[in-house]
Length: 324
Image (cartoon, rainbow, N blue to C red; front, side, top):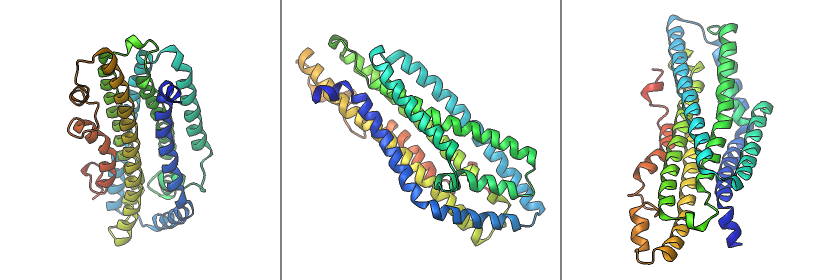
């Protein structure tokens, strides 16, 4: 059993991240019925809202903020894809490639299938996509031509959002894999791999941060035409809560990947130190090179992993997305 775990640890760690994502979606989908009711209320309010000069200007401002967040997201996804493909090419040996590819293709296909088949029975569909898109549909400020362009942009971002995290996961799994020859499992190898892992965590944090920013801008766009009332604040708070939820989920996913990998690598490095370098103090070497779960040694990585959660928690007050 121990040998099997050592051989397939990269898959097990990847599956832990997948499990966290599945649980996050399952918990969020508890709100499916309520999300449909909230969507109906918001659409009714927006449809009845009279058009004034002020809310016309506010809508245009919110649209520009959303377009800016879309540009950030697309750029981040492209950068992440390039890094991930290069990492898989550099770190993944042939005996692991088919398993990692199989994992990635399976998860990516399921993600795309869930997007294609999503409907009003899904809280994710209602809260994150449908409410905003249908609100833009009923708004007299948004024409058919603009709505078509918006749909294309959102479709591109949704496809990238479904594929890119999977490719990053494949890259991190590739980083976790160990060379088949035991003599290649030296201290230099692990030091180089932990640097790659840290890059992966920063890349993952970047796309999740920009994903939260885009989600905030997208969900708040149609609300910009409403007058400043208690009801508008309540609607905004509802969308902010959605962003907060996914910010926490994204940060938890990153923490699980990083912590599980460090725990696994620490045991492997101890074996290398015991057999090849008995003269080196193992505890001191692990501490100095960042293989212990110590916040002092991983402050920059912890800050990066907390970024999606902090963005979600502060999404109602971010100057970048302020509609006031």
